[in-house]
Image 1 (tube, rainbow, N blue to C red):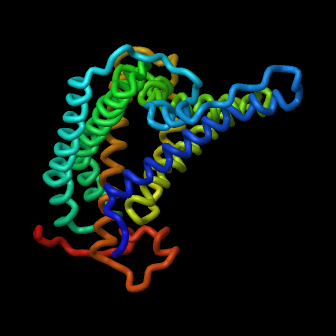
Image 2: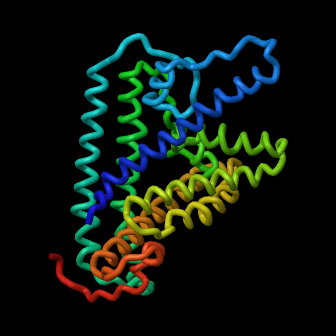
Image 3: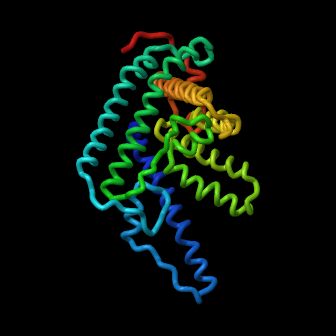
Length: 311
């Protein structure tokens, strides 16, 4: 009864993860300077970042700490206002998608998880809202929100994403979908693992990147929704990892781009369908006494609710 709504939890948890990643980057970039100087004090003392540099990094739209960043000469406040208004429009549109396409479907339908026909219909009915939410989230955050903050801070490096929609391989899709997070994972997980293993076990390094990304994504959803249902984790670690090796950079041609988009469509449908079923199962089949085991056990697997009219 005292928990925050999912949207509020989502904002708080994303901010927590953002600060953790920035803190790791700040420490990872500055501690080696001090340790190197400590071993040989004949060298000049390392330049310790000033508080202003740290504060700028906290708000800059990047997860990689640098003492200096390329800066633009002026702030275009009309550009900032436009991007913030676009974010607001995306939020209203996302709300409309959930109200019109998601809530009526799952609130009034029966819960029949192991009925193959019902599951197929559920997944295909969820593809449209799932893809709309994906594209709206991408445009609102990676394009509008980050560009607005970059403009206000005169942050000139605007490479937040690349043309991921033209990808013919999942390897390229993962590199171009979210460049901000990809750079952090590359520098501080993949490259550091190779440094510790003396450039051996590249496949293990890649597996560490996928595992960390999947765990953090699932942690965000578990805290927001109030239950643990590792649908996204399984999609990451099974299909995502498998497609990364099968649909690799050697795959060229439009057919592979079609395959990538088809798999994204189906994946979004599965995510919206299963998480929505679990959400309404916990609403219509509540437990009298909550426990940690209840947090982990999927309620939609046991909740039986007959078909009822929308209310």
